[in-house]
Structure formats: structure tokens, C-alpha cells
Amino acid sequence: MSARKNADSQPEGGRRGVRIVFRIVLLAVIAIVVLGFLATGCTKVSTAPDEVRLHYAGGPFEAIKFVKCVNPSSGATFLGPGDTSYSYPFGQRTFDFSGTEDSESKPISIVSKDNVEMQVAGSATFTLNTSCETLRQFHEKIGLKYRSYFEGDESSDGWRRMLNFYFKQPLDRAMDAASQEFEWKKLFNDPNVKQQWEARVGQLARQFIKETAGADYFCQPNFAGTGECGDVVLTIQKPEPPQSLIDALAAEQAAKQQNLAQQQINTKVKTEMESIKDLVAVLGPQGAILWKAIQDGRVQVVPVPQNGSLNITPQAR
Image 1 (cartoon, rainbow, N blue to C red):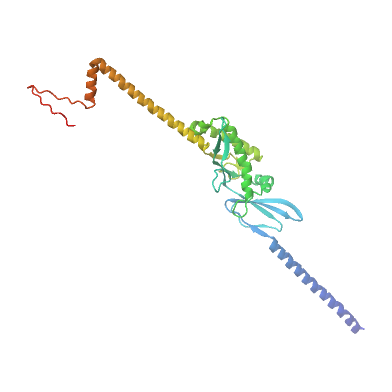
Image 2: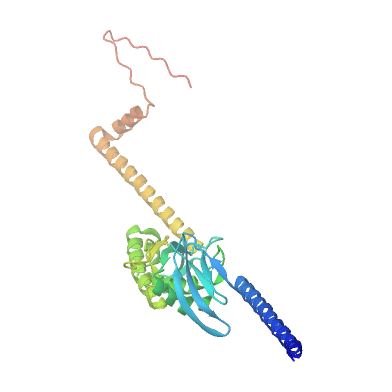
């Protein structure tokens, strides 16, 4: 009976051993798969001195939630499977509307008080507000819409499109409104009027930029993420009218200079005539003619010697 019991128990023990081995192998396979998934799903990011990142957690099967801001010059930050991060510039940036190859926009057209269309080139220097909560709002309201976050080390086309909407359009409105107060010749030629116009443009542009953005997303160039945001700094060139008006203005100035020169000639002739009248009144007509001839070197005056003898040698012709 004991021999039969041992014979019956051996198969059961073997089966139990097989199950244990199978479980161990299964757990090992699962562990390898999980570790492989984590290895391929996790990424790490770091930030440069002129960069800040927004970290969002979530994926295809769960809600995307904001996690944190990754400050400039931060070491490696690990992103879980499905997590994303978005890079934005930290420090001074410029919206360039000079029309050069690397600029964001062509010069802006304005219309003066006397309905002359002029072109204005310049730039707006600013710092993106990277205060964490404000930057998050900017990203979720504007950045995602325009895809204006940076990709690698370069700004995206979305960044350029965003600037054209939030800078060019407010600047266009501000310059047009300010230019309606001045005539084109004064804007082009008068430094005092240009200074007044610049001040007015700056006042309106800052107001319109904030209204368009809806918040203080664009700050003064030295803003460091804390404290008062401040105003965008504008640098604008003298408005340029069409070349035909510039040529006409140059011709007008040349005519004025010619008239002035003629007036000076007329004044000189008048003075000489008055001088001749005075000579005639004192010396008589013949005396005045002789005096003029002597002054012009056409008559030579020879002193008479005391002995009364005088030799005259005619001038050779």
C-alpha cells in the first residue's frame, strides 16, 4: 500500500513543479516585456539656458494633464510613456518687419493724414512671459493653436505665424491710427513730428498687442519670469513715401535753392546799381564812367613828375 501511494504521489508532484516553473517563466517574460516597454516608452529631456519646457502626462487612453515647467539649464527630466513636452524660448526675442531675408514680415504700410501710402520698417523686441502658470495658459490658448512651440533648436513656422497675428496686426492698427494725425511731408522730413508719431505709435501698439493676446504674454526685453511684465520695445524707421514723391520733393527743394540763389544775384545787382547812381550824382556821368574804368583796370593812372615832363608809352595790344 505504501508503494502504491508513492507511485500515485509522484505524478502530482511533477505536475506541481511544472506549474511553478511555468509561472516563473511567465513572470520573467512579463517582466522583460514591461522593462522593454518602459525602456522604449520613457524619454528624457534637458533644457538649454535660453529654453523652458512644459511637461504634460497622458497618452492615447488617458486624459492629458499638465505636470510642471522645466526651467532653463535644467538637467535630465524623464517623461513617462505617452508624456509630451513643449519647448519655448527664454530671453529676448524680436519680431522683425524690415523685409530682409530673415525677417518675420515685410515693412508695414500706413496712410498719412493727406492720404499718401508709406512704408515703415522696424522691429519689436520682447520676452515671452515664462512665468509657469502664464506660459501654460499661453501654450493652451495660443501655442497649440498655432503650433508655435520650438522644435529642436529652431523656431517653427507656427512661431512666425503667431508673431504675424499677435504683433503685425496690432502694429498695423497702431501705425495707421497714429499716421492719420500727420501729413506725409512732415513724417518724412520733420524730426520733431517723427518723434511725436513714434511716441503715439508706441502707446497704441502696446495697448493693441495686449488686447489681441488677452493677457501679458509678451513682456519687456529684460523680463526674467518674475515681477512686472513691462512693455514691448519698438524700434521703427522713418516712414518712406513712394519714390515718385521723393523725387518730386527733391525737385521742389532744388527749385527753392535756385530761387534763393537768384534772389541773392538780384540783391547784388541792385546794390551795384545804387552804387553807380551815387557815383553819377557825385562825379557826373563821364566821371562815373572813368571811375568805373579805373576800378576795372582798363585805365592806368600815371603820376605826373614835378619837372612837368611826361612820357606815355601806349600799351601793346
